[in-house]
Length: 126
Image: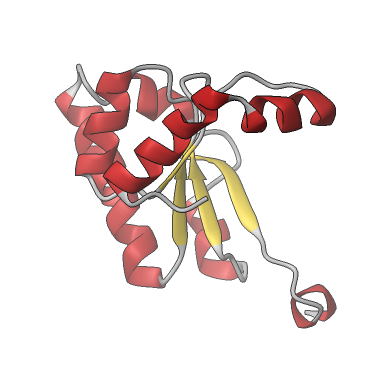
């Protein structure tokens, strides 16, 4: 609670797999849930995965938490997730891991407008 008092925010990573369970959602003062890439990977081809992801998004919305989709690699995944109400997205579609100085240079390049375009198109949060 001291960290929360200092403005820290807590995210539950890889939700839906391993130890990231509903018990954590119930007991921890979470602000954000990060939906595991294993669900994102199948969202365009598997109706069950799509339904599970939609349920996770609804859970976040109902509990007042933001929702992050991990592992977006294709435009089709981006479109499908945006259609489910996703607002925070990460993955190789947007950029691969890089050193901070490279990230700054990448953001300053002309193609950085591509991320802004997606931000505008889908209403995504930064």
